[in-house]
Amino acid sequence: GVQPDLTALGKIIGGGLPVGAVAGRADVMDVFEEIEGHGVRVPHGGTFNANPLTMVAGRAAMADMTPEAFERLNALGEQAREALRAVFRESGIPGQVSGTGSLFKLHLHEGPLTTLQDLFAAPAMPSADALRVALVDRGYFLGSGCLGCLSTATTAAHVEGLCEALRSALPAVARAA
Image (cartoon, rainbow, N blue to C red; front, side):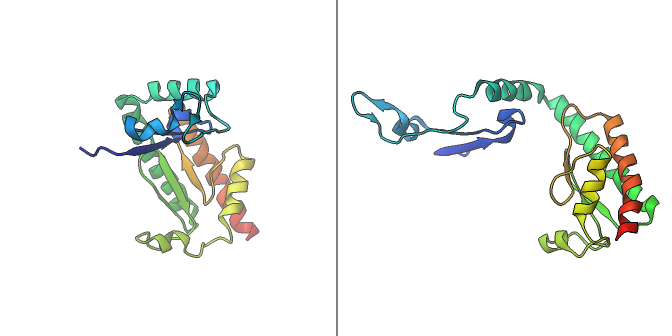
């Protein structure tokens, strides 16, 4: 029931490409309307304005994000988190996996994850960056802090490949520590 004056949008509306958008009530947005002979009250320019590649990618991504796609992606995210947790258990190297939906994050410690500060606890290994590099060397890219995000193109085989890469990378990174 909330009726915002303005709404800022990003991420999925660009289908993975850089984009942002602002939408709002007509009386708020009309500051961008041209006044005959005077231009606009508030000029608006941007690098990605009306970028056709971004708009086509965004439309395709939004069309793919059906309720069934979200359901499949969320289930695959849970499978990934469980499989990655199993790799930590099998390796004997301290670590855990958090996340929700299609997101996961590797934590290189076994301490509690109840506060924001817990996310930055001292790792059992010297650096998450070393693990990220080892995973890149094995064909898997995780974001800063070992954050991962599945997409609609991700399959169970991709998750298993990531687990194999982690299985291989963990001991190598621990030995180098």
